[in-house]
Length: 160
Image (cartoon, rainbow, N blue to C red; front, side, top):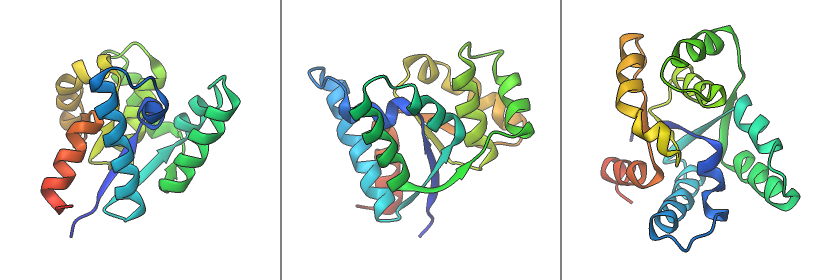
């Protein structure tokens, strides 16, 4: 059975702690939890990044910050550090995405050979096909998806 390398950005890790009154947010939270379960069962391998932990440290609420940090560490298979390859690719991605932290998330996922970058960020999801095409031209095959989509894909590939 093929195990996909998956990177979740900060908002995907935080999604289960968000206000769940919106049905789509609630479904994304449920799917994020399912991804954490897939990681624990080694159906997927979660790659974390230096930028993830930098952003986790910016979470103002101490209890939430500690919970998200522990969750990331508990599902982490390995971590990628920001290096010159990541920075060069992030600099190029900046032509498509304004937030440099998002560029670093995408570049970290691509350089670490992830199949998926999981995000709840509407701007990233809106630009996904454009960024994926750009990455493909640079020999990276990364899909930018929300938790709902990646759970569906992993479930189709591996069964549940």
